Image (tube, rainbow, N blue to C red; front, side, top):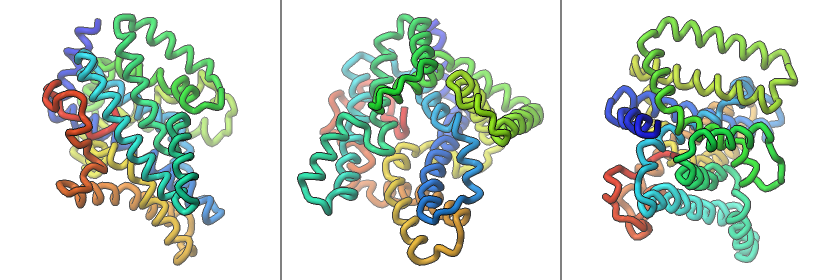
Length: 352
């Protein structure tokens, strides 16, 4: 089974169309994540809700699961790497960016309170994932556990599913998020052939896919607007997350086939860059609006802040590229434990 999955996964990187739909899917996911943080922050600052809140709430069941599923899907092409190379690519890579941006976050948020407080918050962030960086914190654990258990796929998926349904609430985000999210990562890894088949069929049957997506979106909207309480239970959330992730794949395939909304694909290609730095322009844009133009309202403000949080990290990466500040978005060679060409693969530019 594993050999076939790896063979299928190799096609993910060989055809331009398939690369495109994966980038579109990651782009949709990162846009929804940034939109959520931007919108909730704006609404809290202006003490009013805007129209983007409907999209944020609607996407809640599948926004993060789709992101993890994409990360797991891409794992099939690298999981057979030797352990030293694998740990460099999948653990040290993300540990570097987590520690770097944890330090940056702590200096910005707590620096005015003195070095003692800043250091204390940094050390606490080594145990408790810090703010929006929790995704970067938890990914290495997913990679290591999956590689260790790759010979027993049925057991791996069963344990991941059980953890999701049990939904433990220990108060420690690392454990709680691992338990609730791991099943989507594993589903992406084990289900890569099915994801590819879905993307192929969606792209080959555009009108049927569009009609099906409209029906699914309508049903999901009715569930959401009805206030049906059961949709927030673990089994229902799992179903909605799975359906939403499948819809993201289908939409991504349609966009890739039509070469539409190239900015979404660009966001997917650079999702790690956006994820690391979006909090800076997001906070700055929100503060500027609250101070100078609060009258524009929560909807317009949320749109502006979301756009700033998506675009400015890309500008920051481009401006710092090739300079002494390039380490902000590109791991320097001295922080590699394995030779740069050991795996024969490019280092990921996006989570997973």
